[in-house]
Each structure stands twice: as C-alpha cells, then as structure tokens.
Length: 147
Length: 83
Image (cartoon, rainbow over all chains, first blue to last red; front, side, top):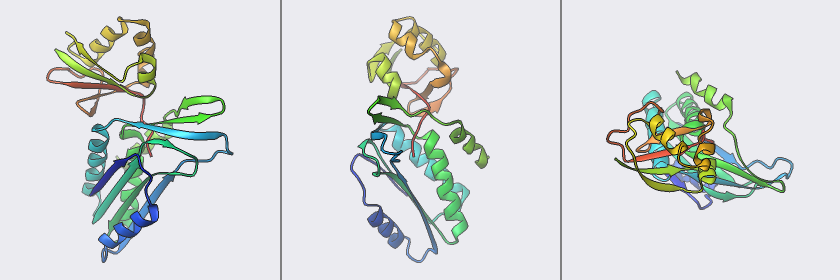
C-alpha cells in the first residue's frame, strides 16, 4: 500500500509505470487520475485544503477496507493539496489484482470513499471571487452502493 | 478538560482561526458547539447550520452526540470534497 499526500505535482505516467512494474506478473492494473476541470475558462485556479494527519489516516483506512473487500495485490493513492491551475492533475489511484474485476471494483470503491470520507476541501477562484465547492448529494449517495 | 480545536475550510474563515486551545466542561460535541456558539457572533454564524458541519474526534469522523471524555483533538469542517 502506497499512500501519499503532497503539494508538489506528480508525473502520472511515471507513477503508473512504476506501480505497474512493482506489480509485474499480477495480471491487471487499473488507474484513475482526477484533473482540475476547465469549465470554459471560467475558473482561474483551485485550492485544496486538507487536515494533515487525519488525511493520511483516512486514506489508509479506505485502502485497508478495499483490501478486505477485494483481492488486491497493490494499491496506490496519491492526492495533492495547495493551489492548482485548470488542467493540472489533482490525484490518482491505482489498483492491481490477478483478474481485472477486483482492480476495477477496488479503484471505484477508493474513489467513492475518498470523495466524501477523506478530509479534503476544494475552493475555486474565478474573476467573480472565490467559493468553496459544495459536497454533492450524489457523492454521499454513491457510498450506498457498497453496502 | 482542555481540548485542541481545529477549524477547516469556510469554518476556519468564518471563525478566523485554524486552531485554538479551549478549556471546557462540555461532555459531548453538541455541548461544546453550544458553548462556542454562545461566545461570539462569528462562532454563532459558523455553527448556525449544523447540517453543513462535520466533526472528527482525534482524527476519526464522529457524531455530535459523541462523548468528549478522553478526547484531545476536535476538528470541525464542512462535508469533504476530495478526489
């Protein structure tokens, strides 16, 4: 399990290659990358605040839970905080398993839980000022999928 | 009891602090919130809609009726928006 919370940008290609190499021979690797949306150029930047300590703890718990539910051979969660421009990569997850179903389900689960159970808060900056991103009801509802 | 209280996102902005040390007789999170609300307008404003506030006790998500016995760190924040 590899959990990283950092301000610095990351190299998605290099991280994916390294993770895949580490899991060589496993059979299946699934990756997901979250990117700052460019909603028609309306937004100048996004700032992500987090709760140091609890963030790492929550991500570890979520990854452990995924490992109990599916047969995962590897799991990476990398999430940035701080200021980012549209187009910048915010975070990534990667899962590895012998067969693809576990890796897909594991990555899907990690994303659902990470969105509403890991202590990150997004703030958007535009010409009109700054606004905190409101949590979506559907993100909370998505957790219900996992019982 | 002495507690370290942390505020994040718009709660931090409304209260104007990211953390403070508070000595309190509150036995639950709800009692602590009531005490903070009574302090000053900025606290009353930050805690005016509790459906928009979440709490963590010693870095674990918790509930407002949870007891504070043995707790050292209380964090208040809005619903999380990671990913």
